Amino acid sequence: MRHDLVVYVPGILGSRLTRDGKDVWHQSLRTALHMAKELAVHPRGPGAAFDRLALPPGIGDHRPETPWEVAADGLVKTPSALPGLLSFLGYPDIRAMAGDLHEEQYLAFTYDWRLSNRLTAADLKTAVERALTRWRERVRDHYPQAADEPRVIFLCHSMGGLVTRYYLECLGGRDTARSLVTLGTPHRGAAKAVRFLTRNGIGPGDDQRLLGRKALTLAGKWLNPALAELCRGFPSVGQLLPVYKAVMLPGLTRTRYLDDEGIAVPDLPSELVKDAFAFHTEFEDALARNRRRSGESGLPYKVHCLGGRSHPTVHGVLLAPEGLKFPTALDDAEPWTGDGTVPEESAFAGWALEEMSDAVWSGHRHVDLTGADTVGHQLSAIVRGRGAGQTLTGEEEFGVLAPEFSVTGEPFEVLVEGARSGRPVSVSLSASGGGPAGEPVPLTPDGSGLLRAALTAPSAGTWVLRLEAQGPYAVHREVLTVVDA
Image 1 (cartoon, rainbow, N blue to C red):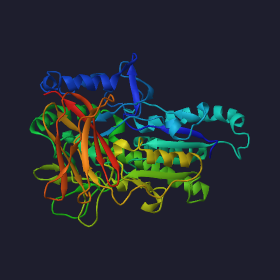
Image 2: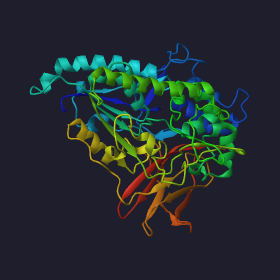
Image 3: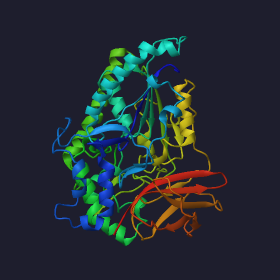
Image 4: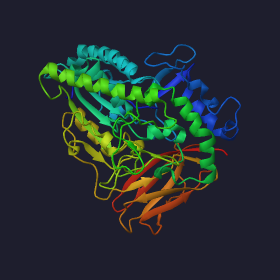
């Protein structure tokens, strides 16, 4: 309803983490990008550049103390990435996007995204109760004709949806909510987390076959081990592991769960798998318990699920004799798609909705879900109580294969699949600070049904790839992390 409190819950990387006023994550990443060659053989280990962001071992659901604690002091506005896991372009003005809300009517909930989602959900509970009490005291000044007491509309990006649904069902928040909107939330996890945490973030997989030799070598020697070493200590990242049947065995058609008896993914810590399944089970058990208590199968709040599809997306892990493989399809029986990070099936809130068509689908990639104008229109409509459209995916959508990592001066490739023959598609590269984009490079047919182009990044840093198609017009973007080598 128009008079409700709107709470925005960002995803992983979405809150600016600071210590002594300095941006810890981006400062660490910048150091790493410009020292990649030295860090690959650093005597302190591959993750040395990220020491400032590490958590103490075995932190579990607890809060860190000095020197590991950080402050979360705002939403990230610029492109950011955990190469091999996820990236995003930075958040636009969510308050304006949601419909020009009054200042007291909007809360951007920022948090330490390294920590357990259980702990973050408890912090969300405290913040929401405080903000809702304050707004209820003032709402009649702005909406004198309001039909009832304001409740909360939660707008949640990516992992923020996991945090919020845990608060709603496990921590007693369900009666505060009017609606829950999830944008690219991995409701059942994401197989990319397996690849990332097994030190394979950059390299294996169809979506990473576009890199040059230097990039693959540097990723294998330094970046993959460094980020896996760091993020194995982040409870939140482990809680992104897939809890659907994502494990494939050679010669068998039946997929298995990560926690099935006899299933052990090499180099994936078993304690992370155990906690991921426990986290999701706690939510599912609380949801069932709440439904029994209420005597109703429905929810006291409306769930709007917005997701991206059309793009090749890692769906599982194949335990092959020659090593782990990360396919973008689990079988040949149906098309498998997603937003490039979260599989379509996981982005669907099956715990609340009946059919896939009950969700709102677009052709946007995970990186761009919160910044797309069409998605903004959906959010505004939901906040105003008008509901959301059924689909934003047009018949002319196409899939993008783009790397997340490269090295200075080495060409990398971008592929497009599913584009209509003769449709013009080009790609350009621009610095994340908003500098001018390079000259667009047209993608050309490669004889196998794909469009292909090669680009080169001129310097280390965070760059944005922009793919632009005509007839009809469409734009897809991706964040590219570039290092010196």
